[in-house]
Image (cartoon, rainbow, N blue to C red; front, side, top):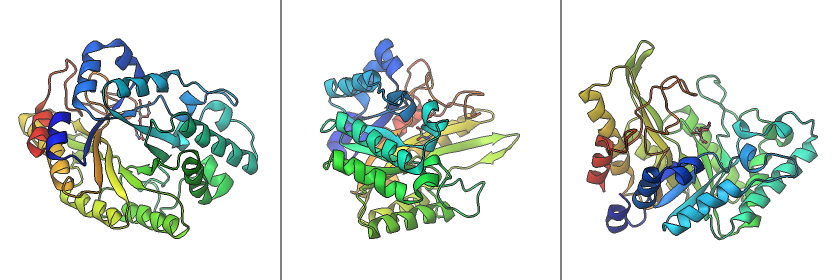
Length: 329
Ligand code: XIL
């Protein structure tokens, strides 16, 4: 994939999330990771609770080893994620901090982590999932995180400015899920970006997660957002001067896995790439892992998902989506 993209779509990185454990312990995993992808997103190892587990203590070993792995294999790293309400360590979530203390903690965290990898990590998800979820809120404001409660919407400005100060050359992203369709949540993200731009906040790109569901089970029928709809949404953002990336693509299968479903899934992986790659501000096509062996989508796993969502099976055989992605390149 990486070799094809370098020849046929040089503006485009092919990416995957990767975790430190299989990267260090599983040689089959490691060889595919280092060969097929040109950008690596640390799946968990740079999240707040792992990289900053104590008030005055950072744990950089795992992040460092992923960065070193990427460098040895000619890959870039997409840093993930500096400020995310779901990733707060206990000392932070349960501490009794004033608004001023929280602001200082956030700024110090962002500057320390970005500064640590200055010049080596050239793009960061500074803000992850700032919006409320469309399913539970009609009023699509920002999530009620500790950051939002302490600083209001300005927490975004403060975090992005701190990252920019720590590494003025890094590209700064907001990463969000469920904004691919032409709907209220995409509008909420769009108007948020416009407000940030009007305040002169450094922001260079938007990551669209593109976690999708497909198939049919007792809860219903699942159809992923159409790739042409996503193409139009992405263009609204590139028209604002931003880069966009697919940041966490996976296509989770529900119900009985049939050949029809397999081919639908594969066509979906292909169509997302085919529809977006012509846009030269579309910088990467990144998946949330590559093998069903370690996918966050597991039967009855954390997200109550059913799996089969990635492009290699659990024994590292490339699946249909892998071949379809090649066709699009
Ligand atoms: C997930 C990881 O895949 C899991 O291993 C972890 O337990 C929780 O986080 N949106 C994001 C990612 O931005 O960081 C999340 O990753 C998936 C949803």
